[in-house]
Image (cartoon, rainbow, N blue to C red; front, side):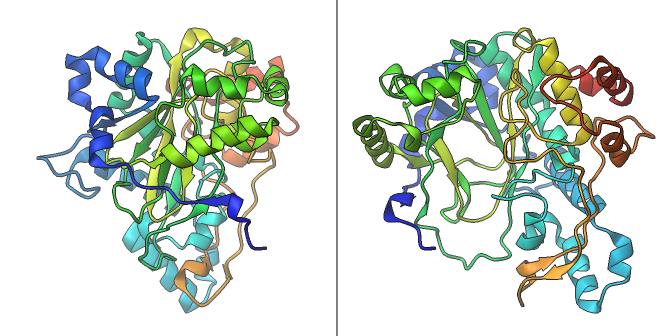
Length: 417
């Protein structure tokens, strides 16, 4: 079905002049702690550069730096673990050739159809990837955590467990995407008394640059976190009811008053920018800032969010332990630990090989049901955990399940969940 004109929009790239006041080097954070805070307070977002350390000024993903190599290796190890080698051995020459190609070139050349089997919308949501090597190495990078320590003025933090974003180039035609689906939203509803008046900073660590016009990236409306804009959501009766239920996602399209909705949408269409993040940069934005994703080319990025431990309740901790053990993602918030609503709580299943077209990008590789969560102790199997926790209520973890989770998870992961 053809999309309505109202469902799509065009958006310019952030210009160098617009980027200058929100671009902050990681080294400058230590010298001027208030710099990143000032940028967030004024613009509702900022870009911290050099969060993935560069070696000798080389900021390419393959530039010889240990951190870059570690992150690239980790996503490739996750994907390699997922391939069902026994099924490959029984497959034809084309399937074996496709697997060799993936092994040689890594995630950048993985077929898009195979990635879709791990999650829709260019998110690695399924098969344990939210708790794989790549996701956890990104979260645990010392510089990532240090940025949040500065923002929250404490070192006692807990982490979120959202899913990685991956878009490859196997189906691109080399042209810039000039239009995208329209879904601007905010992720914080202050009608939920638990989180009201708290500042939550969403983060996205870019392992590939989004500075090219033919890149997938994040779109933000600079300055839309201020009360004059954000309160337009808050005054809506429908969104107030959602907030009272603990539902935080608020799209402009959900606003019931037509005049208010049009005002927000016109503001979005006038001011939204595709953010240009250099490789190794950490994009931060307030959860009250209106934003959305943009699909337009390659991207490898990991959502990150650290919050003060005092915000996270014991009940939420139990839920996050379960998510980590099962390999399931949460939404962005580290303190709420809500299961992602785009992922069902079902035991993972293997994926059979398939060809959905003649091109390499249409190849579905044979995939195992899941990889093992990095948070699980040695000797504990991923599917064993699913079978043991069958029927678990993630909103109210029983003492029996909690004791089991405490026994199967590694201490270093329990310490940050």
